[in-house]
Image 1 (tube, rainbow, N blue to C red):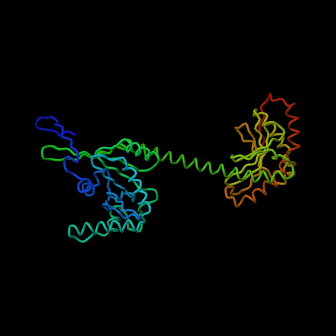
Image 2: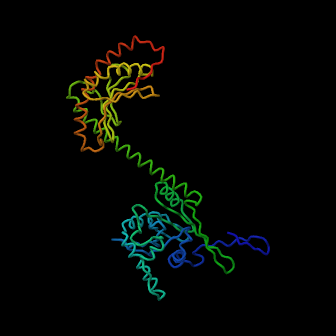
Image 3: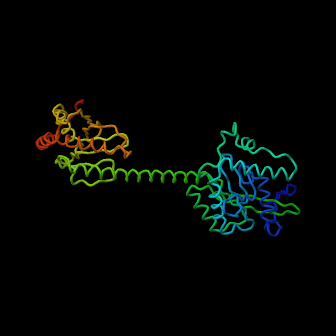
Length: 390
């Protein structure tokens, strides 16, 4: 840090000092400075308590307990000239302790602090609820939200940070835990003392980016957990359904193994044409799926089957949804039923539905698909075939 000398148009280096050499202590100096000027940490903070020791079954004390503008508790730990290797562990313990504090307990802690400060200077204490409403810019105390789940923050303040501390702080940020490191340095110029407070982790320029990356990673993990959950659920459903289908008329799915996808398929005897069972969140369905390598062949098969629509639906016993899927080379003929498939309480009814409709689907399409297979071998695809309107 430099001092500007306007008279000489020069800068002069200030004499960097240690807190110890100046006789400053953590509790009586650094802690008091921050308690009375918390904005030095780069944002508006409300100090709720100093030397807070309101933890069950422990005599530990955190240096400063504060509140940010979003109603989140902020644990502030001060370590003078050296951060020490255990400061992050201390902060995590205190954050864990504070995570259980209710709205009423936070108010009580703050009121005790206000009472003590008022007694010290000989004035009536302020009302904690009113002060909180004013600080949070709320309409009234009823709408104030304090210490939401997993919202606790940590701030570490020291003149020097060990590598094990900074590395751990960066790792915590990467896992979505709010953690900041502030380097504080005292300077001497003549008889004047100065204090520089610098946020070094994360740097102000990278903080928004790092928070965004942490949020993105958390979202990806949440999505991953949801996908795994759905995979386990689908596997369990297919296992139950396939056990039932093995005892039903026909043998379409006797040799099919359960999987984690939302559908399973069995061959119709014609390459690229399968009987599919689809299990979804909002509905389930049975279908004949045409997916040969040639779009023209799929079109031909669809048209041939559609020409027998009335007979096929009579054999199936219900109307079918004929989907030529214009613009795609695949085609689908299906019957769907609304169900909440992800609720296991519905599985017995869904399995019964599949057990009824799978044999009917095979019965309705087995003959027409066999006939279409023979026609396919002799048909010429020189001209483009168009889909009929169902």
